[in-house]
Length: 262
Image (cartoon, rainbow, N blue to C red; front, side, top):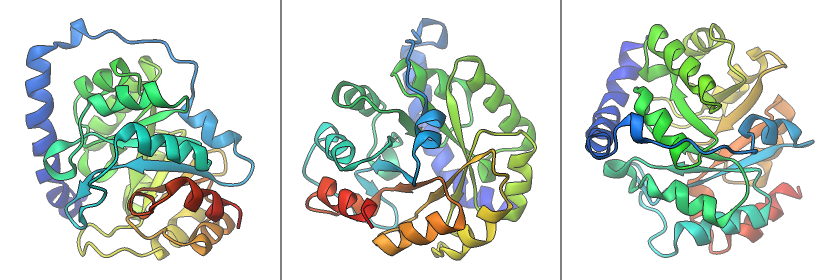
């Protein structure tokens, strides 16, 4: 595991632990009910003949501050799906991103597309919790997990029919991710050591990912123009994850529809 990447991510994991441990005390794992869902996160991305969009809801971020002070999660995700999003990502970590686990349930009430739980997951409870709120997938960040922990969490998610977006930041993490043979790999364009954002990361890593793995380019605000989507499509990305750029649009549905029409 990259020590430098882990150190950058550890404050976010600590915050996530503080939050889920409180919820776990109130609702132990054995009390969680796991609903059946016919929706497949992997299937939705793979079925898109061009490039799929995972549109993300987040209220704020450490680098951008408050992103969209008005509007509800229901309104935002409805706009995303109207604009052509194949799936939605819901940031549930509260301390740094203003997220809430209940946002997943609110999203499920509003739209009928797969939901990705975006959080700093290092415990099985978080996977079961995501499933109990009717999420279809969860994020596993290679840079924040040991090889053993990554494999354990991926296996546990599979047992409860929860897909995983396995996120990498560099070639070393990609090599580690490939060992667990994931169905989906996300390439995050943000360098955790410098916090800079560069689409060159996607350009370098996407061609190294086998064709039978669904490949997602994660933006870090690097995908905010139609030509970025076109470039990633040409590199071989099956999907892009967009958050800040869409959250800042006055009309996310119109903006996304326009970008996908390019």
